[in-house]
Image: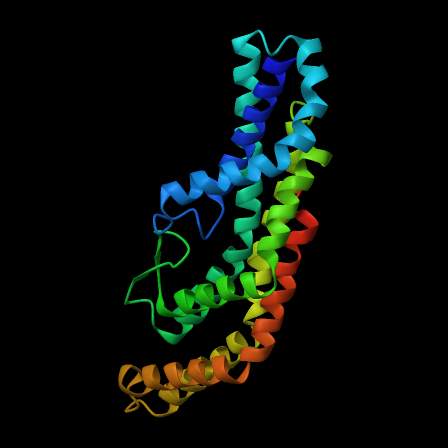
Length: 253
């Protein structure tokens, strides 16, 4: 029984470690590995005494605590589940990145590349600013508490060695299909404003050929985009907060 309890604690540690390792924004290289290890062990010490004992009889009954093949399969399932949970929480940053990329493209600011604040992927100035704002909102709205509580709740809803991986993918696909839509809705007023500006500039060039698009059009697009970001900043933050709060509904699947 003691061996089965230790193995159950190790399985809890594997799920929690995968969650911490892949959870943005601490999944990047900016967070030291020692901090990730310490956080994983600390969360395991809080969660394992409550949930590890519940699966000890099942491990003993199935003989998984004596067979390395069964134990390896269970460890792999826990790793995949923890990484999938972290990836699902990371989806709250994807609409922000899509919104920033669309606005930067319409403003003509995609020539200068930056590094994303949440990972090592290339980004632009608008996406980087919006992602930084999203990270700030993530902590201001106490969503990091929801992430930790959802991790603990996952052991109650999806106990170790007691969940079906096939059912989980339906939930994943449902959430992924909404990310792009939420990103475009977040900056819809700014997108409409920039579309009107571009159409106006093209019409002006048609009736006034001496009007140079690169000389006059680009500064007007940048000015219109900046004005739209300032004017619709409260609405954009509200839409961002509404979408990020939805992780409480699908954080545990």
